[in-house]
Length: 87
Image 1 (cartoon, rainbow, N blue to C red):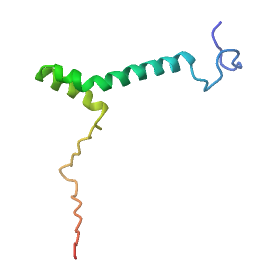
Image 2 (cartoon, helix red, strand yellow; image 1 turned 90 degrees about the vertical axis):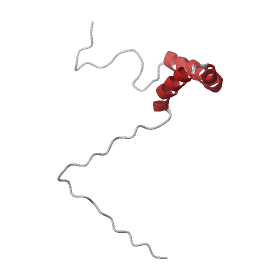
Image 3 (cartoon, one colour; image 1 turned 180 degrees about the vertical axis):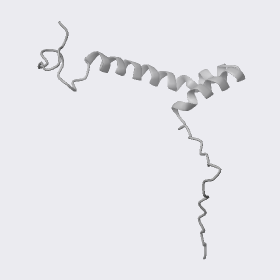
């Protein structure tokens, strides 16, 4: 019998209760990634130059923030800031 609107929720996890298996899986995966990250420089050095560059490019978005390009419209007024530097 599917849930029908207007009825109170009965059974199951309470709202906000984390899934035990998800937490356990996250812990296991975190340990695996931690171990692999320690080996990363050694693994990258074993790759050919092309493969190493390809791997670094694929990993870069996880380390470096993406920069959004800034564009200027043709008729948009330029903001000029006049800085007067005096010592």
